[in-house]
Image (cartoon, rainbow, N blue to C red):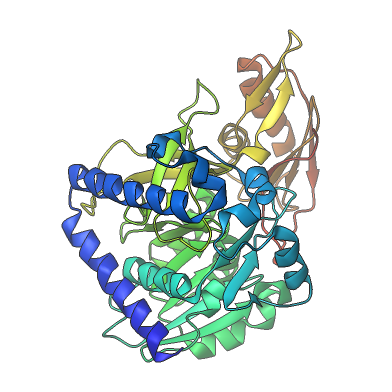
Amino acid sequence: MGIKLRLIAARAFATARWRQHVLHNRRRIERFQRYRLHRLAADACSALPFYRRFSELPFTSLPIIDKSILLANFAGMNRARLDVDSVRSALADGQERVGHLVIGQSTGTSGNRGYYVISDEERFVWLGTILAKALPDALWRRLRVAIAMPGLSSLYRSASTGSRITLAFFDTARGVESWADELAAFAPDAIVAPPKVLRWLAENGRLNASRIFSGAEILDPLDRTIIETATGRKVREIYMATEGLFGVGCAHGVLHLAEDVVHFEWEQPDPGSPLRTPIVTDFTRRTQAMIRYRMNDLLELADEPCPCGSPFQAVRRIVGRQDDTFLMSTEDGARRMVTPDVLRNAVVDSHIAIEDFRIVQTAADVIVVTLADEVPAEVDALVIAGLGRRLGELGIVASIDVTRGLSVPFDSKLRRVRRACD
């Protein structure tokens, strides 16, 4: 890490800590966001071809975009005028830069990849910000941090050298067993890993870090309970994606949105559900605009204040992705949306022996539930009855099959609830 970039990270760290101090109530947060949104909109309309036609209009007049719109207008949304084919080709050749800019891509969980372009300065602003939220003592205390991910983007590797933090990277695609001893020898103070990795380490007595962060996948309550029971420590979520850093869990284990760097708007996909889909605007991104971008996630926001005292919006749970929402046929021939939380709760509540599961919709009226081999055979009928009863309350009649043979995909994202049909 060069001196200039290290100073950028340190300044971002200090600025993020300062914002957490001065933005101590909702009124201040909202006033701060209005100011940042005004500046961001003016900058985008003057610098980026896609937004020029919206010049002089308020922020709320800017279009809501999604991945398809971003990809179709990629060159008009970044200052370097890079087109998506150039970025895709460079990544296919193993490059992580085009000129002086850093490029990257998402994992493509929903079937098509997203791409991004950022500057080194933005990368280290991200680093300083996430350190300020997750490891606030990182500037004055030496810390050993382990990061276990199936593919480590340049965002993570940007922190690979520094005077205070020693990072070790572990490739989960190799399987946890292959590096568990190496992790123990590294003796991290903190670890960042997908829940399935944290759970394996906890169940095998290998999770000894004092600070445990879950990222890259949905943290299921089953995994949280097992990890926290085994370690006696809270699991803190890091909510981030290709589109930016969206939230970090506090010491109480409650996820707080990063409202000092991202503005959130909300849509309600199902009028009868408490779940919301975020539309995000990242204040820190200038090389490529991330303005009013509709995410694919489903969240339930908390109404009550967090015991930590933070005024940043608390999240009760991240449920899943809209791609994993089931579209089921009702008795009257209509199509009804069933969110992942409804399906998950119906299966888990069927029997106490269920500590892992997969639920897949394979056709309009067919669901396959997979359980661990050790779950008693008599549980199958309880799962079918419980899930069938819950769907029946929604006017849905489905064919439900229960199978055995769970496996944990350490080389890709774990999706416990998945729609595998149109």
